[in-house]
Length: 234
Image (cartoon, rainbow, N blue to C red):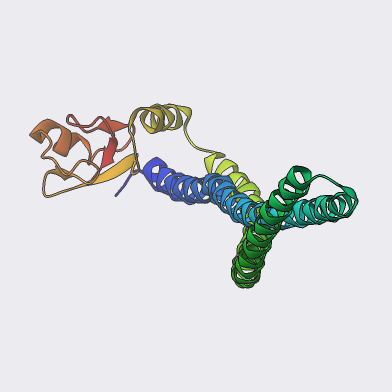
């Protein structure tokens, strides 16, 4: 390779590719962080949903307790009234109300016992799942902290890499640099400057014309692959 401009451009390309890799790594960090934060939010929502379900059971148990006390108050009134009535039909009516209220109290108490057992099971399951979720969240928060540290490191590396790119561009022939930048914008991926080996472009791996293959050996001006339009050298 006799063209000194190509040698300089290869250094530029190497540093450009290094910078691009750092920038791609940097671009992935917010995505990874958002995914972790979304997962943490889902985990926290799951804990809160389980907590609310448990609270709902506790409220239902308290409501049953209130209903039992209300029924017991009514039962006491019925018995007091029964002791005061004189007519048999009124006495029988109160007896029926007392019996009915006792059945209702018994049913409420049975339901309350069932609910208390459900609450005990739910509490145990909630605490176990909560501990598991909190452990996962702790791991995810540590991963986020590592991402923050990595982002800071990559940002510093990117700044350094940009400086190196600019330094490597100093002193390059403007014609070569302009064409290199044009190719860099046009092609989807590196290399932007490719070597021709066995009449094939090192970028697209397709065979170039004999004219391009011969011209790529000459110094003094840029040459391009007639397949992919990358800048080429031999």
